[in-house]
Image (cartoon, rainbow, N blue to C red; front, side, top):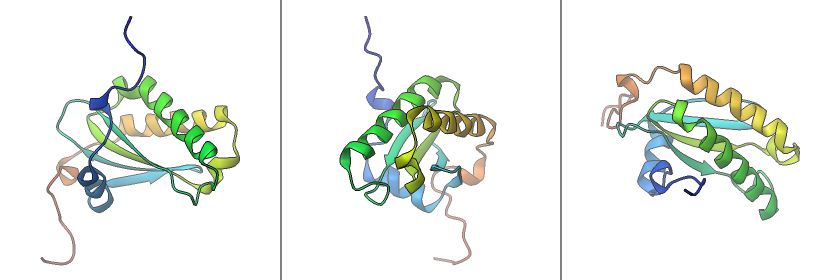
Length: 132
């Protein structure tokens, strides 16, 4: 029987991957979460989490949010386009029960399914207003 966890290839692990999402990516959000996304060219989506102490001072609360996001992503990842995702929690997420957070995550995954990942979001595109 296979483990039901999130495989290594489905996670963002390198600092460079997170930095690329912070600089050149699409973004949207909801009440409790903010999402940044970028095409990855790997054929499958990858998830990165950024849950800061600003969300909650208690590590147990931050870890609960991380577990909920990972589980929700694990269930939805086969339906998502091949993109890198960075999910950031907002302060409002710490006080809500799990089912409400999962409902909001389902809405975010639904938005991601309809997002057009075009050439403007491909890695290496640094189109901006300042010439470097």
